Length: 212
Image 1: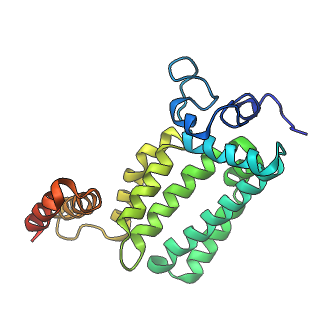
Image 2 (image 1 turned 30 degrees about the horizontal axis):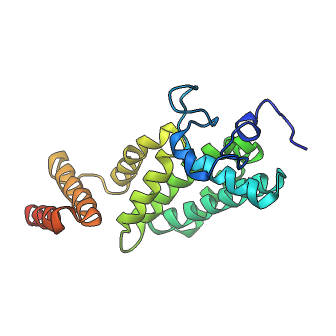
């Protein structure tokens, strides 16, 4: 049975989730399955795609939806530990990850099926922190996490601000704000240009020359 029928109408009444429309239609419709411009307007296609997968796996059962939330939350906790382990140490990282796993806001999001959007945008935020704290920064993973966050909830668009603040906390500007911003900006733009390989890599080479 599906408890809270009113709260999860986004699942039962969504033609993309229930398979009446192909999953690719999630990118042309809003969170409730309405054609863009005809509904409320919340655009969360990645969440809808995960719901469609759960519906297909569970054969209309709510169990995969709950299990999916638990797995995604556990993955977020693990990535948070990895992100904090390097700069803060294993004990602090383990304590912070444990607290995060049990805190009321995150626990409520896991309990409610429609909390999937909050879980995914949190996973994207923590994943971006982890990718930037790796020994060899995985900027392409950061871009993937940004895309996942932005396509999961509207607040996902501010993730670069969160990551920049985290970078600022870990490495405060000792030489002044202007050199710090210049160094970080050129580095991030260089990685973006290298990923996109714009103009056959010309932009990447130009930015690397500016940095040197």
